[in-house]
Structures are given as C-alpha cells and as structure tokens.
Amino acid sequence: MSDRSAEHDVSRVASSAVWKGLSMMLWTLRRAVDGAAILLLAYMALAVLIQIVGRYVFNYSIAWSEETATFAQIWLALLGAGIAMRHNQHVGVDVLILKAPLAVQRVFNIAAFALGAWFLGVVVVGSLSMVAIGMMVKSPALRIPLAIPYSALPVGFGYFLLEFALSSIPRILRPGARNAEETGI
Image 1 (tube, rainbow, N blue to C red):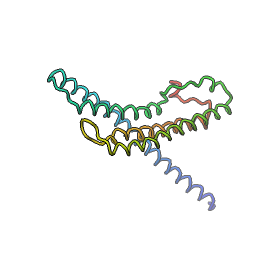
Image 2 (tube, one colour):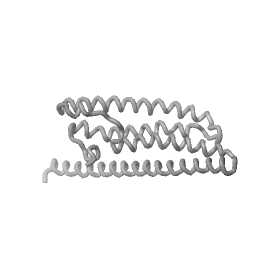
Image 3 (cartoon, rainbow, N blue to C red):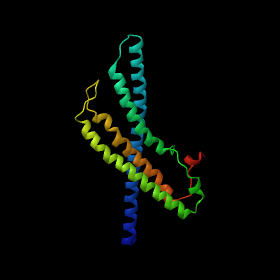
C-alpha cells in the first residue's frame, strides 16, 4: 500500500468520523428542540388552564400564569418555525422554477438561499441588542429580566437559519430532485 493510498484511507475515516459526529450533534439538537416545543406547548396549556380556573372558579386573576404562557407561546412559535422548516412545511411557490432548466433552478435556489440566509442572519444579529436591553427591563408580573423571552429571537431564528441551510443545500446541489418529504411519497 502506498503512502498516498494510506493517507486517503485515513482522511476518509477521519471525514467519516467527523460526519458521524456532526450528524449526532444535529440529531441531538433536533430532539432537544422537539422536546422543548412539546414542553412549551404543555406548559402553555397548563398555565392557561390555571388562569381560567383562577378567574372563573376562585374569582382571582393569576397574573404570572398569563405572562408565562405568553413567554412560552413566543418561544414555541419561534422554535416551531425551525421545526416547520425541517419538514418543508413553509409556504413556497416553486411551480415556475421547477419548470425551468436545471441551471436556472440552481441559480434561483442559490439566490433564494442567499436572500433567506441574509435576512435570518440580520434578524439574529439585530435581536442580540434586544436581549441586551432586556437585561435591564423586568417583566410586570414575575419581575424577571425580559432578556429571557427576548432570547427566543436569536435562538429561534438561529435554529431556523440552520434548518433553512440544511433544506436549501440539497436543492442547490441537485436542482429538480424532489425528496419524498416534499412530494408526500
């Protein structure tokens, strides 16, 4: 076996290990986001139920339950956008693009990815200043820093950006190929 062949085998094993590591990290992140979304939805339902029981059974408004349910809803909506992106459930009109030649499809897919990534990047970076301001402002009922609910913006849109990139790369590399999830097959 030549040195060149041995180096190629070593690099293939190393890249395979890196790929497996990245795949495991992505799988772990997705399970964590799914779990967080489930917990947020369950908490939101419970907090609203507590508010309803407090208001109509005990004639007492429980301010913290309404506030925390709102915070949970914000986090759920922003994490849910990334989950929807993972499953290609966002609305997109691509009828004309799919009828175009593959080279034109690739150009449109690259342009769409560049614009989408730019927008999401701007939102992530721009929302960091809101989180910084939220460190100084407290919520009305619980008196917690508003940085906690405001953190949903960079975290949610950052996750959305990751899923957007992961769903866009195959469209750029193989325009015209539709996966089973998109076609429902």
